[in-house]
Image 1 (cartoon, rainbow, N blue to C red):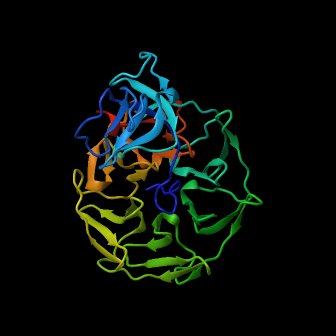
Image 2 (cartoon, one colour):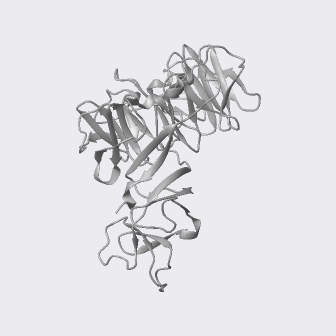
Image 3 (spheres, rainbow, N blue to C red):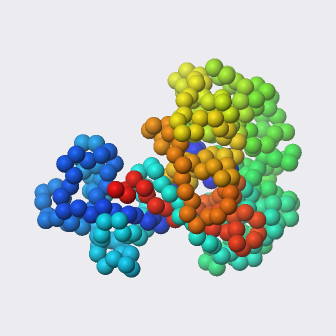
Length: 358
C-alpha cells in the first residue's frame, strides 16, 4: 500500500472535478431511498427551491447548496435534463460509490523510472525521488525540474509522515526533513526497535504510528521521546504493517483468508467478514484517494461500500490495461496514474458519483 499521501486517519480529503449525473424532478419522491439525490425543477415551496439539488438523509431532504446557477452545463443540454452530464468543481464529496474517469495527461521532462510509488510531498512541492532521478514538479508548466538534495539516492517510497514531521526510513538510513532549510538530517530513534528498519512495516491509526512484523515485533511510537515502545495486541500479533489498512474509523488486517478488524477499546483483533471480495491481501493493493477506498490488483478493481462491508466491482473508464496502487498519486487536487516515463502511461482522473445516478 502506498501510504505516501494518507494522513494520520488513513484518508485525505481532496478537491476534484466531478462529473454529476442528476435526475431532475418536478415533485420529490414520496418514498426516497437513503442518500438519494434529486434536482428540483418544480414551483418554489417552503421546503424546496427550483434549481436546487437535495439529498435525502434518511429523515428529510437536505439542500446541498448547489444551485443550477453554479453549474456548467453539458454542451448537449442547455438546461439540466435527466441523465445528462453536468460538470462543476466541488470541494465536498457526496456518496460513497464512485467511478473514476481517466484521460491522458501530458508532463514535460519525465525522468527515467517515473512512477507514483516514488512521488512524495513536503506539503508545498511534489517530488519524484528514485536513486539518481531527483526532480520537483513545476505546477505552472507541468514540468519536472531537476532537484538537488544534500543527500544522494533518495527513494520516495521510504518517505513517511507523522503530524508535521517528514521522515525517511530505508536503505539503512533514518532521516528527518528540515522544512526550514530544505535539507535531510540524520535522525536517531530510541528503543529496542533500533534504526535498521524501513517504512514498509509502518501503519497509522487513531493518531498513533505503529511498527509491525509477522515475526511478532510490535511497537508504538512515543513521539515525545522518539522512542519505539513495545506494544501488546490480543487476538493476533503475527501480522505485518504492510497488511494493515484503515477506512478512517476502523483498522483492518487483510492477508489472504486472514481478515481481522481491530477492537480499539480492548486492543483485540477480531475476525472480520467481507462481501464481494473475501480473500485478499492489503500488501500494495488497497488505496484511498480521500473519498473512496479501492482494491486494485492488475485487472481486479473494486471500491468499498463501507457501511455494508461490501467490495463492489468498479470500472476505470479511459484507463487501459492493468492498474496497481503503486501507479497512483495525488497532488492535493487531482489523482494521477504514472507507470514509467512513457507518455502513453500518464493519466489524470475525474470522478463520477454513482450514488446520484438514478
